[in-house]
Image (cartoon, rainbow, N blue to C red; front, side):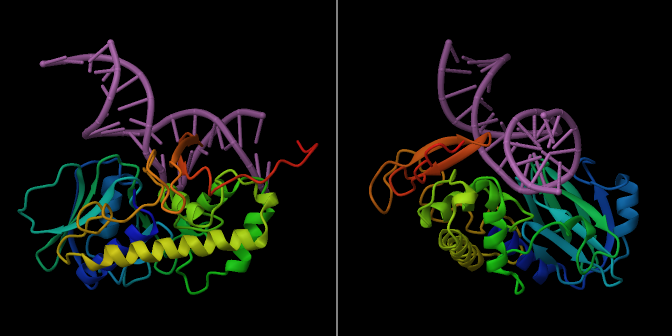
Length: 283
DNA sequence: CATGGTTCCTGCAGGC
DNA sequence: TGCCTGCAGGAACCAT
């Protein structure tokens, strides 16, 4: 599942491969991922345009055009971009093809089709569709104090809060579990009972975990093959809790547990990550 | 308005 | 062998 580090690896690959390239043609093989006013309108909005360097906020990725508009992309669960020769075999689940003016082809591949592409008129700086997304921890203007206070002001629980892309962006289920483990915090810790210090530890841990993952993903990147599930390091990343049910905690040896949470999975060390004591008489 | 539950999608693993 | 169910989850959407 592409989260911030994976999307950033893809962005860097795209930056090297599509910046300055003009789109000569677009082929929509499957309509679903084109979340715009039909494939024809989408194609009309992209063909003849020239890509500037791709940008990112959280898990959103966009390709500014030189005229101020942009093409916005989200990888969803399984989205990938590839650069291929036009005649190369199509990978399974290839959805949209972009013929570039250097003779190569940009391909959007997405098995589950939770991802998608759309136009963003006047969206080169920031697509309107992304305006409600909070800054991510890698943004130079990210304000950790503000994020801490926004989390503590919520009437919710810590994992829900850090997965809320309007509070802090870029974190998905994997990094949420990993950073909560690192910060020794239970996913169901009420945000109203979070000390500022604990909230800070969670956010610092989130950036640390994502930084380490990005470092791994970036090193093995193949410049001709932009793929979040392939050589990006995504699967080689070392995980302390996510998907590690039954394995010993790297800190204390206790077996990692899987809980059902938000119709999803939450992995934690039940010894390192404890809930605060219930307040007597509190409902 | 904030919060939390539901839904969209497909392929694969596991049970019978 | 083959069918069925459950599971993976980002984020828009909807009900409360």
